[in-house]
Amino acid sequence: MNENASVTYIKGIFTAVFSVLTSLFGVLAVPIMLMVGANVIDYATGLIAAPKRSEDINSYKSMRGIWKKVCMWLLVAVGAIIDELILYASGTIGITLPGSFLVACIVACWIICNEVLSILENLKDIGIAMPPFLEPLVKNIKSQTEDKVAKHEENE
Image 1 (cartoon, helix red, strand yellow):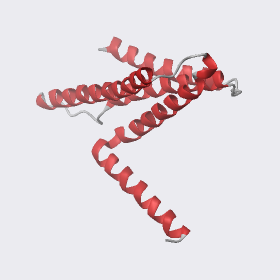
Image 2 (cartoon, rainbow, N blue to C red):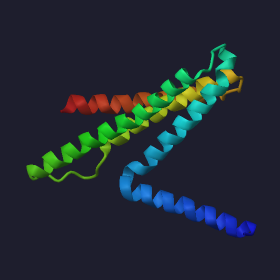
Image 3 (cartoon, rainbow, N blue to C red):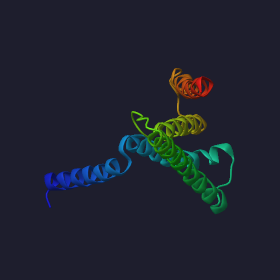
Image 4 (spheres, rainbow, N blue to C red):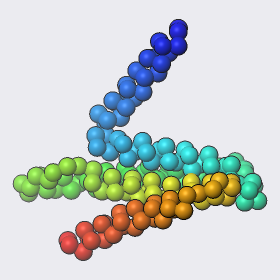
């Protein structure tokens, strides 16, 4: 297989995977992929930063970290369940709501912000210089997500 055919094959695999995820999750596909990517990067940078923090790396801590990431995915699933209940209940009383997976998307965005902050902390501990605007920017996005949810709860 020549190099051009290999690139085409890899592109085909990525397209197929993304198409399946999009058909399964719809609008939630991109936040889920970003969240999983952030989970993997956070886990990897956490392993690299552990010796710099004088922390021991053992299988118990590693498994606990992996299960924590899996539970984050379950939080998004709970958000999706809540979304489906809202759509079902509103449809039952004759109200058609625009869009779906609002709660799940908000949960995923909140988790992504937390993961990005953790990645930035890990990179600082590793000794990587950070642009001064990056951490405040992520914290601002996280707080805006939390504020939107709080305002939505006040209006109900």
